[in-house]
Amino acid sequence: MMMEQFSKSGDWIAAMGLDVPDAKAVAEAGAKMQREQLLIFAAWSQVMVRFEMAMYANPDQDLNTLWWDLVEKYQLVHRPEGRNAPDYASKIHIVSAPAYYHNYMMGRLFASQLRRTIAKEVLKADPDKAVYNGNKEVGAFLKRMVFAPGRTRHWSAMVIFATGEELSAKAFAADISAR
Image (tube, rainbow, N blue to C red):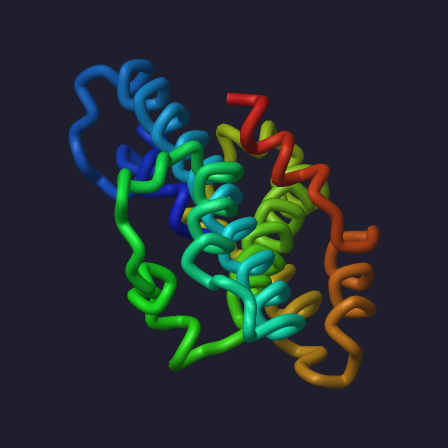
C-alpha cells in the first residue's frame, strides 16, 4: 500500500530510468488519481465495515436494504429502482474474508503515516515528492523500525515505535488534501 503511490509519481518514473517528457503534468495527473483512489477506497471501506458490523449484530434484518442504504450514504451510488436482490453477496470478502475490510483501511492509514515519517525522518523531504529509489537509508529504516521487530510488539505499539505516534487518520487526510 505504501509503495503503490510511486507508480503515479513522475519523479519515481524518471528515477526508474523512463523518459518523462512533462514531469509536472505526470505529477498533477498522478496526484489527482491517487487522491481519487484514496477517497473511493475510504468510502468503500465505510460500506463494508458498517455493513458487516450491522449484519453480524442483526442477521435477520433486511440485508438488501441495509447494503443499499450504506452504498447510497457513503458511495453516493443510488440503488437500482425496483431491485430486490442480495447484491451484498457479490462482495467476496463477506464469505472468504469476513470482518477483514477494516484491516485494509488500517493498512492504508499506516502506509500514509509511515510514508510521511520516512520523508520527514530519513529523507528530510516533502512526502509528496519523496522517492526511495537507491536510498539505502530508507531500507535500513524499514528493516530496523518495521521488519526486524516482527511480532515482538502489539501492532499498535509497533505503529508508535515506527512512526512516533498512534495510528490515526491525520497522514491519510494529508495525503488526500495536500495534492
